[in-house]
Image (cartoon, rainbow, N blue to C red):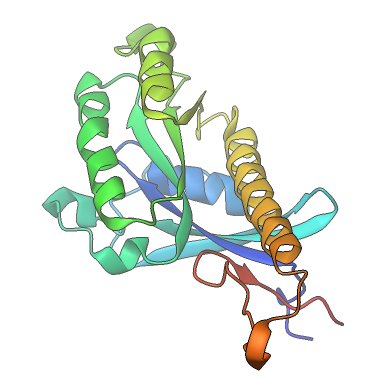
Length: 211
């Protein structure tokens, strides 16, 4: 069996936010437990994967980084295609990156699936002495816009695991409850031999369960 094919669900999660807020380091910290202080802007499309356990199921996360496109405000719609989750990242020590969260959120609403699960992430929480965005302000914004919220530090690894675990669990529970819903709705056999396909193919890819 090819390595990595043994999973129940595959979820695409995108990282968005201003350049320099630490998206690439959040990705490398979660998927490889690495942090690069000299990290340059990402060039070219980059994604990494990691599998976690949620409610006894193996969930494989395919996490995409913006590939430096955000510097040109030109993230392509292909980047968002098929994404079921998004981490919207700002730097707690740079207020301008928080102000721009509103624009990124609008872009998500315009280009991503309407059911996408969004988490607001205040990164670089290790820079407490330089904090420019209060936790309460960001929490209030999240509540107002229906987002979950967490503060992380890719540098000292604080809450990085928790952020990804939370968003992947939220996605899994939504997807699995929809599967349950669609299966209970279709208890009666389809009329005239029309087969009813799975309703979630567009938002989640179910992986192979066999060995």
